[in-house]
Every structure is written in structure tokens, then in C-alpha cells.
Length: 121
Image 1 (cartoon, rainbow, N blue to C red):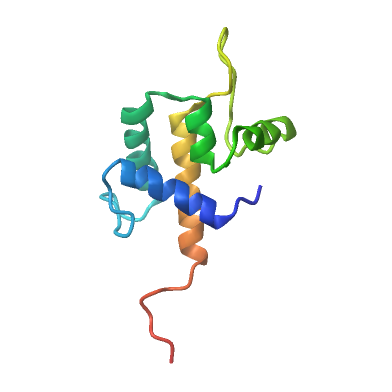
Image 2 (tube, rainbow, N blue to C red):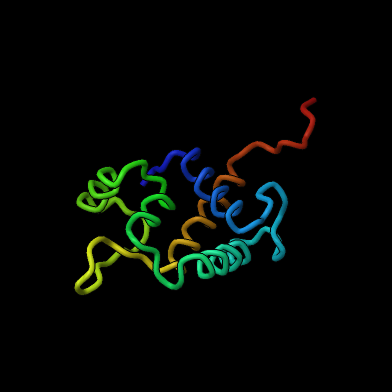
């Protein structure tokens, strides 16, 4: 699934800002996917607990409306495993899956982005 980079960047930046982290500097564990995944997972766990509910999940995945999120669910385009809970409305996901997906997208964006600090000759 191709998610526009600006949606991913906005989602990650929002999560990092909500956690009090500076998204322009490397995190504690270096630039590894595992380190960023762990940092995001801890931040998300403290904010939501082990599950992310329907509206928060929609926002974290970058869908602007609940209708867009529902359509993506129907079409099977959600990039992480989602599930229903008995006697509850909506779809849910594990914080661990969401954190891993966001960290992977950030790493891919960093690899494909031109180096900002290099001078062109």
C-alpha cells in the first residue's frame, strides 16, 4: 500500500510531539528501526495501553475521516493487523504493530530522502 509520505510524516511527528520527543534529532537508541520501534511503542503504550481504538487508530494511520478508514478496512488496505473485540464497536490494533509500521516507514523515508546536510558540488 502506498501511503503519501506527508501523512506518514505527520503521524510520526504528532506521536513524537505528543510524547515530548524532538523529531528532528536521533532518538536514544540510534537510528535503527528496532530502537525507534521501542521508543514509539513505549510512548504509545503510556498513551493508549496495549490496544489502539478506532478513532486513535484512524488518526495514527493517517486517514482523514472515519469513512476513509472504513473503506480501507473493507478493501483490505490497512497496513497492520486489525481486529474486532467482542461486544465492542470498531476495529482495534496492537500498539506493537502500529509502532513497528511507523518506524519502518520512517526508516524508508530517511533512506530515500536526499541528504539535507551535504553540499552539492
